[in-house]
Image 1 (cartoon, rainbow over the protein chains, first blue to last red):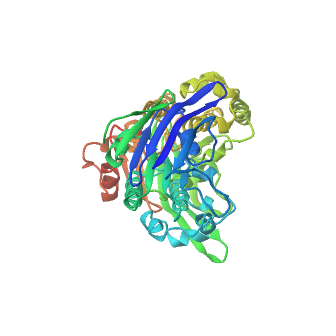
Image 2 (tube, chains in turn purple, cyan; image 1 turned 30 degrees about the vertical axis):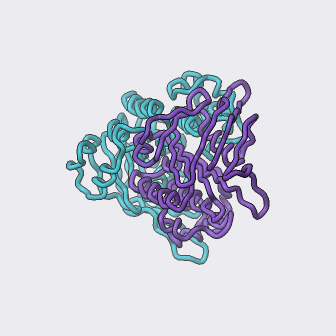
Image 3 (cartoon, each protein chain N blue to C red; image 1 turned 90 degrees about the vertical axis):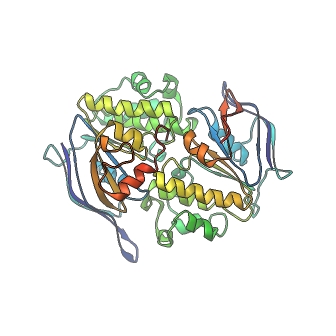
Length: 207
Length: 243
């Protein structure tokens, strides 16, 4: 279980998270909705250890979330703007192997073609790069995956394929949090949908 | 009228054969209307935008003809709001960036007014790009293109990552600008919103245009669409949802 308890974070005078609690079970796909600028991405970065909250506690399967050389974080965060999270001078093959050998099944499920490996990020489309950015996070050590608007740069058919790939990961026991503005899409694909309101989580309806 | 005739884009590659990514595209976009482009991920939509704006990667080779009013477009004729948020300068406040784009367009900008049309508060002018959420940065990116006052605008995925109300506002703005006489080309995966404001929508699959249909053909079960891929793409949409 990924447990985030009493998370508080603010940017200047703006409090984005206010003693928020979130639990994500292994094998569960949870959706998170909320208007633009309410702190959804901030939460994702906090859960994966990219950002330290002002206060609160995060643990994955009973241990505090942490990482170090050769020890990737069990919680991985797939960012909204994949173009800002890759080195534009690396070829796609190297990007995919950033954290270790990529999961072959995931590459196939996401439609990542072997010939992309020799290309530079600029030679992929926005949607193709989003899929590469996601695939490199599926490591043997990854227990929880935070997906921040990763279907936004995809056409509807590719978005469905991506959710099928995420569902397969969930069946293997991975807990997945999908952040999206598309409530209807989350209702169809997630086991439950939450919303972020006034710095706290509330159910947005049971799918 | 912005016209594209037989546009092909290929990438030169190191010790590898040329890679053809876009083939035989024809497109006619009248001013005073929104022209939509949609299609599968990787179909070449953003390359069309880059070819029009002259921002193709250095190893890309484009052939074909792009004209505005029958002539090769002069600099500052077409403004591009690109899909990638890396288009924003990470080392400049949003207000500074808007002023810079206005200067490049040979004009000045009422920045607070421009931001309010996009649903952004005036305080965004003092913000650095990293302080904005994805949805706010997306709209700031669109603002930089609008600040140039160019008569032609290409918006690449302007509603990606926006909540429903913001996405509605942005698409309505595209329609309003067209009604004011601007020529607008919108690339989007959000087919329900795109087709509702577009006069025509061109559908691309794997580097080739498969169909150009009137916006209103994207309705019901898509029976008015001629190509099976267009119908599948339409039927996979979450009608009434956000993007």
